[in-house]
Length: 326
Ligand code: PMV
Image (spheres, rainbow, N blue to C red):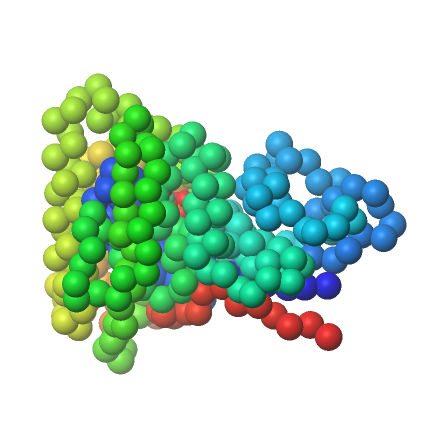
């Protein structure tokens, strides 16, 4: 039996615009998904949590299994565990894909390969999102910590790799970086979940159609890119007030793109008075919001008063991890 786990992520700046090559910043969170793989002795086909594996129901898993098959024919039993709520903008499917890559690399007796895990998982996400997916979720889940995507190689950040993919008929290129951020003592990130499932592919398609029908709206994506740049610099300077300000500005542009929702707005309004900055995170249409706050308990309480589920998350959690079992 082998086991691997990978963290979820939240996007501090740049969702949606990053699909079109604009800069963005994500960070790994405390919630993780884990995958256990065990050789199947009783059944002659693959199973997932006790049921026969159906590739149509689990397209990510099928994609990764097909690209990283075990060396022998013996089927496997996949067990999925985790604390990342599904379809909530916290990257549960990316974390699942990355953890599966880590587990399959072990089954294949290969050393842990983060780049391969990040790349294969990105391709699996793109396939499930109608070809429109940035490598942000999957890279953050694989590498952990803070991940910056940019349209150019940033000299003052630690460069990881370059990834390209065709999106809406245009070749997009993302340069992935990381950096060490020092978060001042007392500053926390609170996640508020509306409990409403948002569909990443539907929201990404909605933005694609908006841009196609009204090409001038591309300016909004560029505005998000500019805010993201400012926010990333503020974080590197340890200026949390400016980080929060940029987060809130980012949210206003996301709202004007039509990807927020009444539930998200309600939680954001509730969290704002006790926070440095608030925004939705991920694809939207439901899912989660985040608040950067110096009063985490108060912010959690305010979100819960409005019917959201709220929790405090740590920054800088490790990426893909192999768990050695005896
Ligand atoms: O909601 P999530 O966790 O799937 O995040 C989606 C982020 C987008 O920028 C909307 C899409 C992408 O592929 O980057």
